[in-house]
Length: 284
Ligand SMILES: O=C1O[C@H](COP(=O)(O)O)[C@@H](O)[C@H](O)[C@H]1O
Image 1 (cartoon, helix red, strand yellow):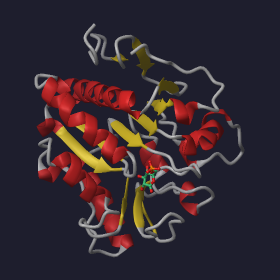
Image 2 (image 1 turned 180 degrees about the vertical axis):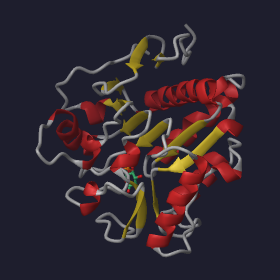
Image 3 (image 1 turned 45 degrees about the vertical axis):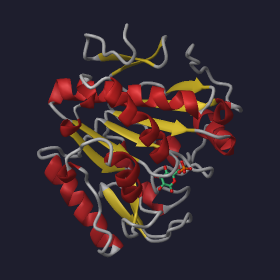
Image 4 (image 1 turned 60 degrees about the vertical axis):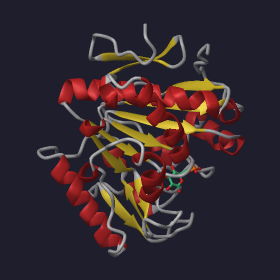
């Protein structure tokens, strides 16, 4: 089977992450699938194959691919692998960029020129190299107050997902911080209890900058697929806690469990060093 090929049965998909088929998922709340790569160098190409396979499935089923991306270390990983993968396989149905809607899982309320702006970094590093129509890149308005920016962002999402009670992203790509935060959802923060808003403002982010907007857990858990990407030994301890801990008060990243979707983790050996659960290690 070709790398990244989508199998005929649309209810069941497999991704080839480097020769061997290692990922398989079916619709429904499945246990998280964890795939480990020697380093970020091998993880990057697998990440782009995963994203393109999800995009192909979404375009085949619904004519468009709605993906939300996180900031931080993910930006350069995606930028290093995705344009190249698209250029290598221009006929890949997932690489039809005009069918993509790109949102942000969270965003910092800073000008786009700031090195802290997630959208600004994606524009510079990724969107300059793949042609997603500008009106389908759903950016915040950083000149508004954080509350208004969150409300406007939610409004724009509602427009893009008409008729959906909750916008359903095909894929949300997430990172984690060493404290277990994901998006701008931080441990023990009241936003973890948000049930009404799909996008929330936060003005007291413990990680700077303090003002941000973030997807809430109800929106994240409405997605068809959540993909976490984690590299580096600074995340090893918290990753063990997220994947193997059983807490009454789970860390934010452990609360992402799409109701009708899948959870996948693509991680490197350094991040995986403390895990004892079963993981996949594809032969590369
Ligand atoms: O502040 C943030 O941190 C997380 C993790 O970032 P990383 O650089 O440690 O990978 C990121 O996922 C989130 O989008 C960002 O706002």
